[in-house]
Length: 117
Image (cartoon, rainbow, N blue to C red; front, top):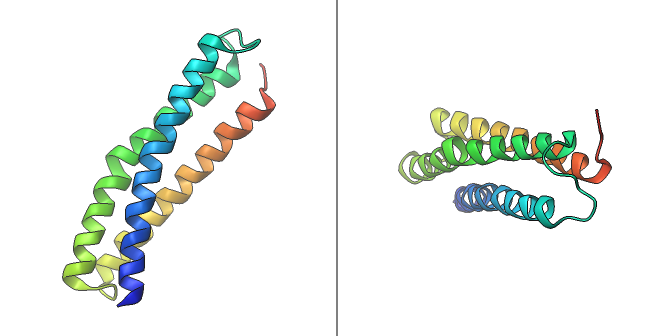
């Protein structure tokens, strides 16, 4: 029972983080491009790539992670964690979360090293 509650809390928190963090990254990124020190603007590769990847993470959070997280929460309460469909949904949410985390890592790498083409 404790594992079920913890899983639901983790999924809920994860959905909120993946909805809020990319939006804040996008807002502050645009602000830095407009008011930034030495950033020429969106014509720089790393700025455009970071912007696009951040938009992808936002779309993943809004279109997949949040709705599936709510579905997972309902399934856990209704069927329990041992249900095969609940477990499969939890795995797919976890995979999407790992993919989102990987994309965010790429965005941070682009922002730190600022590669040019």
